[in-house]
Image (cartoon, rainbow over all chains, first blue to last red):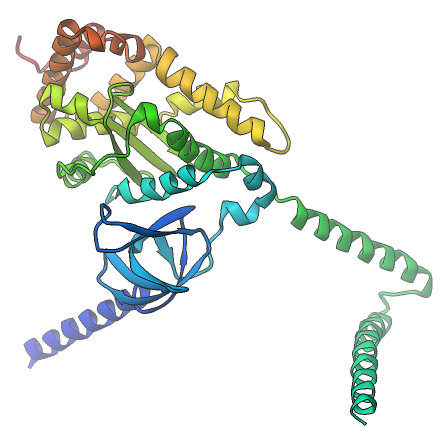
Length: 128
Length: 276
C-alpha cells in the first residue's frame, strides 16, 4: 500500500512538473525577446530565411517541439528557435531608446546579421 | 434627427466626464479636510507640488537612462555585426559537442556565474576571447585555431574556461570602461567610440603580463585539485607554444596573450605536479 502511495505521489509530482513545463512553452501568443530573429522555412538555422522578426513583435505559436516554434505572423508561417521568445512583453532596446536606436541607423544587412547571430550562438549556463 | 441625438449623446458624455474628474478631486480634498491635513492656505502649495510631480514623471518617461549594462549588450552585439568581415562568424554552424563538455567542466570545478553564448569564428584574427554583453558572456573561439592545434573537446573547454574566468575577473571590460568617455546620455558617437576601443584592445593591444598571470593563477586555483585537468592544461599550453613557434601566421598571439613561454614557467611553479 505504501509503495502504491509513493508511486502515486511520484506520478502526481511528474504531472505537476510536466504541467508547469507545458505552461512555460506551448501554443499561444509570444513575444520576440531578442533584437532580431529569423523566421526559417524549416527546422534548421541553415534553411531559407522567410522573414526577420524584431524585438517585441508578437507571434502566434502553432506548434512547439521545445527547440523550435512553428509560428505565424501576418501572412508568414515558419520556424523560429523557441529560446528567442518570451511569454511577456520584453524590454527592447529599440523601443525603450527609440531615438538612439534610430541614430544607429542599421541597414538591412546588419539587421539580417543580428538575426543570424542569434541563430549561431550556442547557449549555455553553469549548472551550479 | 440623427444630428440631434449625436449632439445630445456627446454633450452627455463630456459633461459626465468633466463631472467625474471634478468630483474625484473634490473627494480627495474632502478626505484631506476631514483628516485636518489640508488648510485652505496650503491648498495652493499642494497643487503646485502636484503639478511639479506630474511634470517630472513626464520628463522621466521621455528620457529613460541607458544603463552601462544595456549599452554594453547592444554595443557588443553590434560590434560583432560590424566586424563580421574580419571575424567571419557567419558560416555553417560547427558543433564539436563542446557545450556539454564545457558545462560538465564548470560543474566539476564548482564554477558558477552568468550564462554564456559560444560563437565560432572562421578566422584567426581572434583565436579566443570572452566579451561582456549585458549580463551574458560571449565566448569567441576560432575554428581554424582549433583545427590547427587539433584540440579535443576537453581542451577547447579549457580555453573557454580561461575566457569565462577572464570575464569574471573583468580584465577586458575594466580597461574599456576606463577609456570610454563618460557622457550623461549615450549617443551615436558612444557606439563608434566603444567599437574603436574594442578593436584596439582586442586586436592591437591585448593583455599585459600581469593580467595574463592573474588569469593563469585564477584558472590554476580552480583546476589544481584535479591532476588530470591540470596535466591537460599544461599540455594545451605546450601545444599553443609549438604552434606559435612554428607558424608565423600566429606570431601576433604572444602579443595579445603573453606568453606561452612565460606561462610555462608560471605553471611549473603554480602546478608542481607536472613530471618533467
